[in-house]
Image 1 (cartoon, rainbow, N blue to C red):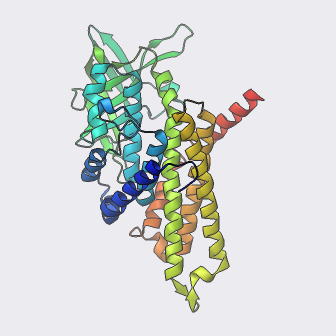
Image 2 (tube, rainbow, N blue to C red):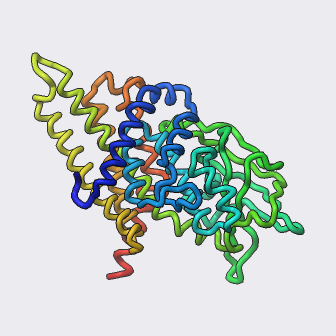
Image 3 (cartoon, one colour):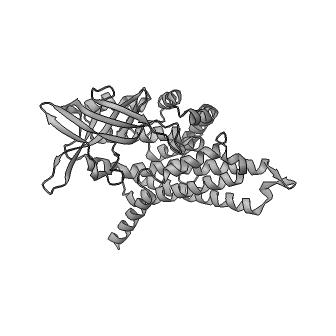
Length: 383
């Protein structure tokens, strides 16, 4: 048992690993090839409590720790990162609803996405607003007791499925006294007139993660679908983003661990020049590096999650963990592919699929460059 983990953490890891090996691994290649959202897996994950681990039991959650949720995502991503991302993206919506939603909003929208009956999507990114979230152009104007939304979102995970909803979006609702945009968050249920789903986006990784463009054309929602205070949208989202970086780091750790285990297994099985390729020092060094990086990433991520659970500041640790884990996952996926040789570039092999998945992790929840900016700013401001 890793230092600092309890027996409960080990039981969670074992349960998720059994689930991932039995339910996800056999269909992972098909999900990749068909770019199909895994409805049955999502429902089962919700019923087993995986989606709601760190959220209140009152709304269908498990009342557990964020460290436990990191372990859940790590074990799922070890087998299929796209499936793990469905839980990660869902948690972004769950965190916003849990932190800022009214009692009615929580019971109506939070409980279903924690229990696996629905899946949440967060609509922040736009064609010209990614890392620069303050640059969003989607607008929401008050008209009597309603809000009228116009605009577009892109790269939205968990969108376009039969169980998507709610979608929490950020929209400009006015101008602040200092001239900056006033941004607010809104809950938009699926099926709302004027809310449309655009084309399904094809990605180099996360192919089983349903990703679409979203469009809002005179989309009317009731006034009580404002989430939290008017004008607090950007602050609400940024308050959750460091948690998202820990969770993306957990996906990266899963890829790192999976790449290591697959490489070791293949090296013991494959023979070249009359002996197992595990006997070649050049390949031994590759798995030694993978194991070292997985250990370091695990310590960083578990530390950041434990800080969050303890109510301590963890922003810098989250950025460091996300940066390190995602870059090392990309490196491990690359080396695993090299170890597998020609078989590694065939999509029927998990190492090939993990390579595409790993690249995505260096982009989402703030690119590696953004993480370095955040870390440097923290260091220089406290020096």
